[in-house]
Length: 298
Length: 325
Image (tube, rainbow over all chains, first blue to last red; front, top):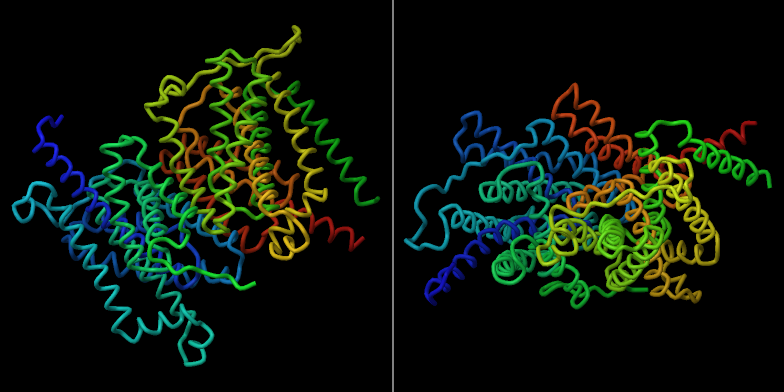
């Protein structure tokens, strides 16, 4: 237990650093949720289990002896294609269904992925490799190499997503399709495919989140339940229709969760912090910190 | 007239069969029968909220847990007799549901699903919280004593508990039946389908929705309390996300906005995991994946081809039969 002032500060910085590391994972999970929310106004409850399944896929590849980054790249591409296939085959028929039906379908998907992972890979907890081995970066003592690398990967993903939507024609078409489907269709954008690509991107980003989280929380079929909950909290906190708000929310939730766990409520009830954030934000500021306020027209 | 008479007969026949069941079946089957009745109570409660009122709850396991822990703490720690403990615990549930219903008013469809999902995931951790150890027994939970039959009736504890469950299920079923066919029930359905029109017609949305949440939680609480008595044990791990999701599966398979269908839903979520347990003897660990796979596939299939669940399918089969006659 820290007794002197200096070691207490050290302890605090350490907690802050590991909060940021997991916060990066929550941030990109929240980004994946926003990706689907913007286009369909739905939250994908299966996002966590999809990410878990992708992570198992990557684990299988590294287990076969593939080098880490090759396994990483192949997993991201396969997840992207899998996300598109999922939208085309399973989600699409429910495009016009009420919210309840969509939520039930997402829950069904998450149960299926969980069962598939358990059936294919078993229910025991496994180690997952990290490419960021060795000594902590920049000679500091607060963040392990993997934690620093994970934050870096999260930031890179955020930058890439931003650049994709800002500078590419496809990104522009996707934004247009999400904002005004009817007019987009009139100018020749295939709105249905834009939705499918959105699902693909969400699946790919989720896969990266899973691969960054797995070395920290270990790999098992239920590894993403808690992470998905924190990502929900992050997305709700930052504003679920704003990618950068959601990413900020993810980092913030990571830090708050870790500090609350270390100093206030104890690590055994950390999940209730997410519950409190979600309920609190929805009651006092339903649009989140950076979200647009939605006014319904009667 | 011709529509209601067979239905009443069928209900009475089912009730008679359910009443005879504990005197014909063996101990473990009686226990399973009680579980089915308990689950049916919880499903009726959830269906009042989700099926009839359109408020999505992915966290009813939390109210089931409050009922279970309430009954356990009242009987074991405070010495309250079980037949008072269950009503008291379910009143606490009504209060909790009513209070959760207030923020839920502001959430609307999807956000309510998010908040209740969070509730479901956080429940086991809150129950195991060290600060409540003295009352809740922490992660090891509380052990209850199964109630014996009163007045020296020649019934085993299992048989007695089954009959208690049957009485509760019957009473709560008829209460729910009366509720949904009354003016209040029509208001609940109107708030689900046409909220703005309903409010224009003078339905107090806030009052109806929060009360509906409270009543729904009360049903879950009765079920949780009875379940604690039947199992003889409550622990945090039994009230996780999977319990809440199995309730959702139950109402979807049984039929959204149906009450009789909840018996099918309860049979389904009681026996599918059982079946998987039996299969795991021969197929090993991979059979553990079976309930989840079946649940997931059925949820999606039900939404795609059978949105009314078993009850809806039976209803259209009957309609088809009466047309061709």
